[in-house]
Amino acid sequence: MRIDFSRGLQQTKKFAARRPRALALTFAAALTPLLVGCLSEPIARNGAAPVAAPVAAAQLEVTPSSISFAAAVVGVQNSQTLKLSNTGGTALTVTGIIATGAGLSINGFSGSTLLNPGTNATFGVQLTPKVSGDFSGSVAILSKSSALDTTLPVTGEVASAKLAISVGPSSLNFGTIGAGTSKAQSVTLTNTGNTEVTVSSISLSGKGFSMTGSSVPIKLASAQDATVEVQFSPAETGTSSGTLTVDSNASDPSVVVKLSGAETEENAEQHYVGLTWDASKSAGITGYNVYRGGAEKGPFSRLNALLIGGFNFKDDSVSGGATYYYVTTAVNSEGEESQYSNWAKAIVP
Image 1: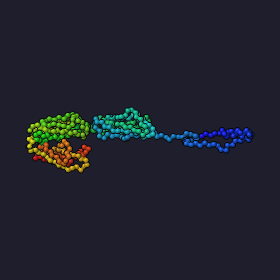
Image 2 (image 1 turned 60 degrees about the vertical axis):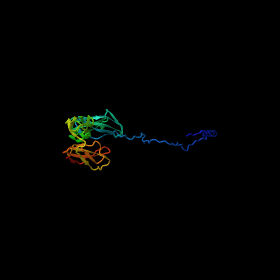
Image 3 (image 1 turned 120 degrees about the vertical axis):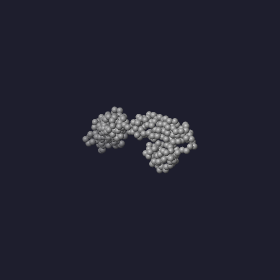
Image 4 (image 1 turned 90 degrees about the vertical axis):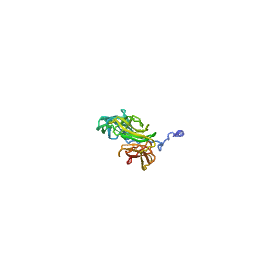
């Protein structure tokens, strides 16, 4: 704002020249300037500066508060995730994560980790047990402020390593087939132990027998299985016998499956078992598998190489005078297979 007093001063000078002794100036009111758009902090009555709101201190939150390895195995690495979060208002620095206990270690910690307010970091707590039995250890989290340091307990139940494999069925009988034809059956390898098993070799002997399926070496985790298809294509009339041998690092390092079959003229009489079943009531079923075994509880071996789209199957790889047990499973569009159905018994005359 600009105020021009020039004219007023001139008038005053003229007036003063005419009456030099009668000049008097009176200010009736003081000029108060108008301030627009200005905002200031309130000032304390005693003149002190305003006090800022206190900032929340750093706060370390550890998740989980304890760690348990409930089903550990000697020599097998187990891992769980440890999460550190800063839920306070100022930064904190984690200076150490120390694991105490035989076979216990920390993965992912580089020596110092800065956690700003509202941030977190994750690390791995790994246990590779040395001995079986109850495990007890701890993990200590250290920071630049000792008030934030914390320790969480680590426990576990450790079992001795069990290397075991099941190969089933124990024998394959392809029955009698016509000249120029072939039949296939499957052998299932299952890790029945609690630690990884490695199948180093699978060998086959006997005229007319061949094998397809998984290539060695095969690593099977606990409860995992693999399937090998054995095919019988006889080259001459008469009976044939052979073996399938599975070598691994399991407690039983070499398992043998006996193979047998025979060839006859194409128009000769053959035995077979005809199977039918009801459709599964589950949604998304794309087909069925048929399994055969020599006992009610198996082990069972799959007979079909491809999924069966219908509700019947003819097993003509049977032998006269033998008894067989059959079960079926349903497979959905995701490749998930159901449990075995109830078994059906067949006695071949």
